Each structure stands twice: as structure tokens, then as C-alpha cells.
Length: 84
Length: 159
Image 1: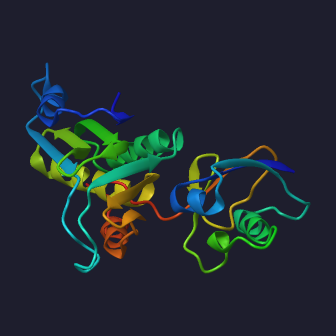
Image 2 (image 1 turned 135 degrees about the vertical axis):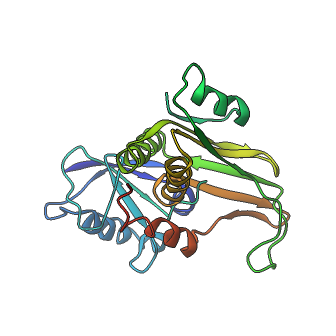
């Protein structure tokens, strides 16, 4: 399954990337599972590790970790928002 | 257009006037303007803020703000007009960041909807602030008090 993954703010800086196209293996069906998959890549990505306060959106809607993901979705990961 | 995300400054007085221009049913205009603050925080240990850069999620930001305005109108059906402006990019202390204006027949729904929109914007709209200080850049941490401010509306469906 192919997904577009976006990172913002401190997460974008930590990963050195604002956007990537990711091919995920079968079985990765939720935002939390995707985050775990991304966090485990390479030597590990501490900024995405469990315990870090990371929020997510699927197709530009803020969601909880158990939200489902599907082919072609735009998934964003970011720290808690600080506007206003 | 009730929601704008822009680099340019805005004129709060003009925005307020536009909410009631040409109509005679508006009895109350509540507005909020947020500014960049230069003071020390983080318990007084941080250094002063020299500037602030606002990052956002283009596309989602506008949708999130429109959803917040729609929710405010659902809770306070007597609201007659809403305007939300949020600036992005680099801003200096004293500059305006955000404007929320609500027109209503009476002050009750205008005050309440204005505060509700700000509280939800703080916790649900995808903006992130980075402060420039003498020691370098520093991402602003989300505050529990902002979550608490948004949560207090959760049991309240308005009138």
C-alpha cells in the first residue's frame, strides 16, 4: 500500500523531511501501526517513538491512533498544535 | 469568506465593521486579537522572544478553522456573522497573529462563540509556533491549560 506521509514543525526538523511517499507492508492498517512502522525504519526514529507526544491527521482530519488508513491516503504526523 | 490564513497583517477595526456593515440586526460585536508577546516565559528562565515563525498545514488549516466556525454556529444559532484570520510566517513582538470576530443580536452568543472559537483554534487548528531567541530557535510547547480551556466546552451544547 502506498501512502503520502507529511511531517510538520519539530517532527519535520527531526526527520529532515516534510513529505515522503511510503510503501507499507500488508497488515499496517491504522495510524498507530504506520507510526510504529515508520519509527522502526533504519536505525530507528526517536521523534516518532512511543511515548512521544505525536498527533496525526488522515486526509487533513485530526484523528486518534486507531484510525484506519487506506491506499493513497495523506497521513500527517505533528506535535500538539500551538497556534492562536 | 469567513476564514483566512495569510502572511499579511489585518485591520481589526475594519474587520469588525465589516461584520455589521449594511445590516441592522447586529446588536453585539465581540472581537479578539492575539499579539506576539516578547516577555520571558518558561518560568522566567527563557530569554526574550525576538521573533516568531508560524508554520501551518496548508489545506488542513483552512478546513479545521471552517469546521470550528461551523461548530460555533451550530452551538449558537443566533450568531449572525463570524470572521477568523490567522497569520503565518515570521512575526515580530507586538504584531498581530490572530483575529476572531463574532456578530450577534445580543452579547451572550457573541462573547461565548468568540471565546469558543479561540479555545478550539488553540487545540485543533494545525499551527505551530517557533520562537527566535538569543539562544536560537525554540518550538513552543503545547500547554495543558489550552486543552483545559477547550475541554470546558465539551459538556456545553450552547443555547
